[in-house]
Amino acid sequence: MPKSDQPKPKKQYHHGNLRQALIDAGLELIAEGHGAQIDLRKVARKVGVSHTAPYRHFADRNELMAAIAEEGLRNLADKVHRKIETVPDDFLSKLEAFAREYVEFAIAHPQLMREMFSGINTDYDAHPTLRQALLYLFEPLVSTLKQSQAADEIAKTEYVHLTLIIWSMIHGFSALVVENYVIRKSLQGTEAIDNMVHLCVQTLYHGLARKDTL
Image (cartoon, rainbow, N blue to C red; front, side):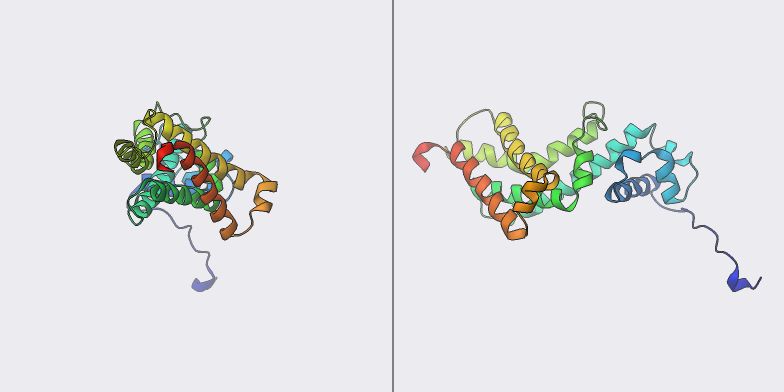
């Protein structure tokens, strides 16, 4: 057999950060719609390492899925932080920036969003860095809430509860756009989704704002 016709050996992983490579392989599998089937053997095969190699970094599938969820949260959080820094320094502008980035990320990465917030696959109490990533996501929103409360712009309800209310609306809307065919069909196009995000934020804000500020 001529040398040029000989089969090429399978490319193997030889360098760098194996842990990150395994996480990246998991992210690719999720994007391909195989989140439920992910295990350590599958990511090892995708990276090109032995099936025992992942155990140097992850004790089991749960640890791998927690690391993947953390990567997703930090990617989303980075987008939120960058966006919020570019908008005017008032509560309504920052709230809408947060909402837009969150919804856009959910639409772009629906499979990953399911894994990021699935209690089945990820236990926030068991994974401190995963919890830290979640808190990092909400840092700019919490900071804006506290500043706006100090300025008497919005109601002085416990900020943790307000954060949960805001998250519930934004995450709920994101889930409906991604998961519900009727909603998705009625909101075709970026402009329609942007308009709905704006309406959600305006409705939420005027429910939170002090009545004498309206």
